[in-house]
Image (spheres, rainbow, N blue to C red):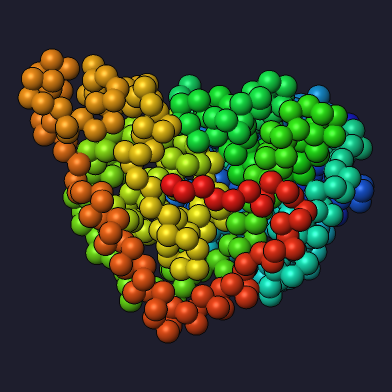
Length: 521
């Protein structure tokens, strides 16, 4: 008996293809959208039966940087795509297994001619996986077409000309796929059990209202509210831990997993600026999009920074790890109220604004004097928008593992007074201090015994004393910086890094907001 899965689908007989019909695969990775999608557009153009798929890879899901929050967000993105594809009768197959194993099984009964995907700047484990996929495709005679993602250019030896290429890509027409013209490939019924995500851990299948919801549909809801109204206070509230939760775009998770493209947002912001709609905010937002790609390009060119200092000579200046300090920082019990509030907030919601992220790194590596690597992995797990190409370069820069940038030492008390003056954010996330008024809440260890009793917070019992003296730690860090800067090997490495990865001053002229001078911390 012959059955046809859809009017445009592949003919199936006795749960097996009638013949090895030439077909192609669109492999979704960190590009979970249907709009501005080059692989989809290319698949439509060939006219071949097309299989859309995504693989939850157990090896990737168990890497140190992974957390349930990431995979739940991805699952929500996939659910959204499947809903969007329903009217077109196009299935999106979601597998729970290693990519190579899935592709090998597909190749057993399908004549796969093309594999389409985006290039991926990600962790070492995905790089190794992609090398295996390349070998697989070569062994099967499959043409694997990888498309560049956002403004990232693969294979660059230095940054000359990169900004011009980035600008060209941002202003180019978006890749539009006419889904009505796509010929979907339907898998045999026997494959259906392999496509059920119920095999995934239960926590990934359940939603959590404390986190932003995944999906291209939700991404556009956030984008529309930002460009319509929330951007009005974008620059003013960017550094505020509480106010930024509304006034910042909150689009970073959708960019990290490709529910939106950088180009889509750049073109909207550019158009609004041209129309006089919040022009200053739109320029600042465009600059942030540029910096987003700037750091990923760095990581693309020097991906070893995932596991080692980009300045190789810095290894001999490595700091010791004091487990008690690292644990206090991870749990939000350092005794610095704003630091603890930030850590608890990002643990509970996956979100923290940029300045507070930088402060967490500074406190770990300069105030508590701990090595950067355990902290980088910990925050990678917590950030819902974990983007390796931004995370590792930023972490190394903030911890001074790169060496040719300014030493950024964030004073946790000063940051608290400036960005949470009334202590509202602190009270929200550190309930031990909920009765302590400003300004005492910023330095609760200065309360008298009577004040501690009155405000129901005993320092050293209900809430800890600061682990260290910040001023003394900052002095130590500056001496450490000078010693490194005078080291010949460090100097030589800095020259190599600047030559290869730094952005020439010419880049600044393309986006005026980039030239804004750094403020003292």
